[in-house]
Image (cartoon, rainbow, N blue to C red; front, side, top):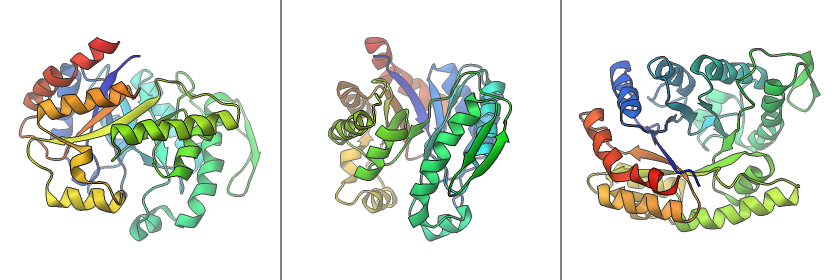
Length: 299
């Protein structure tokens, strides 16, 4: 099993060009695998695809993912072109991960799709993304989209795997039916292990199999106990979950939690610091010393 460790920023704070550049440079320099950027149209964080394009221009190896991008409300044809363009221009480093978006009235306004309509939109749009990446011409007549021999260029360097977010049972079953991987958030290793069974059962029910290495988890951490604002976010997103169950405090705790995810077969880890460090280079140098040995131990 190839363990790969990247970083994410979440969507609760802004980041300017200088600080994003410092993060990208430090990730590349210290040997991290990837950068994952979240989406919140009404939040202060930049658009993830725009920010990833910025990062692509500064790096040569770092993979570029979303954690996750909202699919309902977007044209599959135009989104396919955007991801394929990023993949081509970055030399094959694109890692799309998509979801339905949060249940928030402002976000629903921004994307123009009611919560009740998002699942149907998503399930029609996701297969179309893959078709635009692989077929010369796409013809489709559905509830939300109609295409008549439409070809989208460029194609990505290779067909892109699309990972999904979510943790409700219906969302996990959707991963099994439609996704190429699952990126968990606010989930303990035990939660992840149980969810994997649901995903693989759903995949088997439609004659699919999931790549055993396509399971990942976002791991929040900090160097002091989680602040109250973060505790409120976690409790709102996942009722019944305590912040201390899903947040690591200090390097030793972070390393042990990462090892616990790896032990249940989750080999793609995204570290998310809940406070921005004064120096990304210094932070990532310590993080590399603490957690990157897990890559070498299991690769």
